[in-house]
Length: 310
Image 1 (spheres, rainbow, N blue to C red):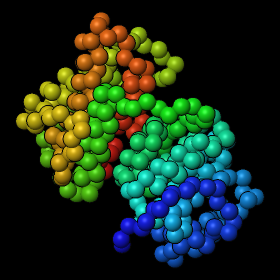
Image 2: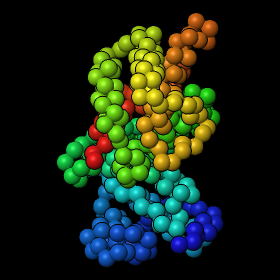
Image 3: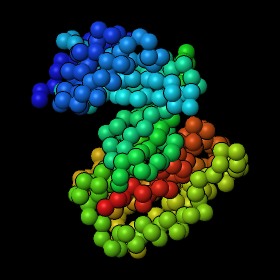
Image 4: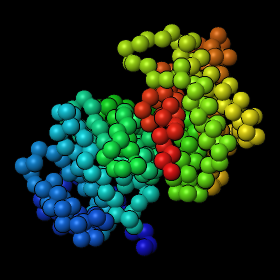
């Protein structure tokens, strides 16, 4: 299907009169799912206590987003749907930003299947952080929860720094390798599987720490930098070449070399921070937090083996 003309994209609050049009652009409802169609009509009613945001282009709705407040009394993005002809063009990001800006609670959550890489990439780019992994909702495909702390009335975030650009690229390479494995384009060898097990064993002491545990800055940077050394040993053992990832599109199909390169790039950032600490001083807290979210905690490299369920 050809891409539609977005025209002047507007995101507005949805109304009950939007229900039929939203059913028409929802691929599940339009495919005959009566339950989804009924949900859309319910979400659009003004007495439901949630919010519906509609992204509208030159010729009508292109997507919608639903925020409800029944998830432990916090905001939750229950549904994000973009018309297939408008995907990959910023519509989903605009809807998520509208949901975050209008959220009435201190925290806003959402979830998606581990296998849904387009949604996970979108959430990452929109500033959401992994918050937990739940098994059993869909057999063989865990649900990854994400958290966004709405910031209303604050300035636009600054342009990405060099370390943030490195991390963004690492996420792209990571997602490419996991996606190609899950889609069968990368079939892991017994050696690759063993190396992943060895990585998990070698880094078990670097796992997630309760937020109440406050480590000295140098200890935090050492935890990050240790990954670089471990990855170099793993790559040498298996004969994989580690390459720079910043600003580079990962080759496809991606495999073990791309996966290790992604994680190594993040660990290498910790080495750089440590080496430059006496000269540059402490790196910004937000950059350290983002790097730690890549390496430690739910949905991170720490859960690496859980992303492979073949």
